[in-house]
Length: 117
Image (cartoon, rainbow, N blue to C red; front, side, top):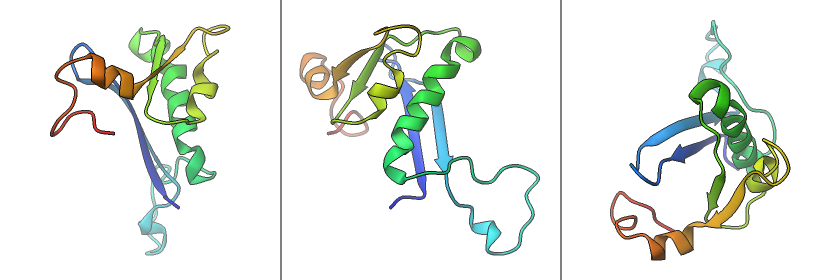
């Protein structure tokens, strides 16, 4: 069980992170009776569902915050996240692609500090 999770959107063209959603169910300072002026926990639910929620949050805000509409979702395994975003901008507006195929097709994506599976 993981109490923290991170989902990112990375540009295939530049390799730069376009957006990031960091989620936590727990904040250590609660045990120390530390008072926060902000919300220290931004996710409630199972750790297995964090990827889906993070992906949805990123896709949901992409147009309003970034003026981008993501149309492709690359995943490295069978995750439920794609099901959360595939119809976010209308029916079947997001296409699912596999990282393994991308890694084989595009040079320069694998190696130290790059896409690993």
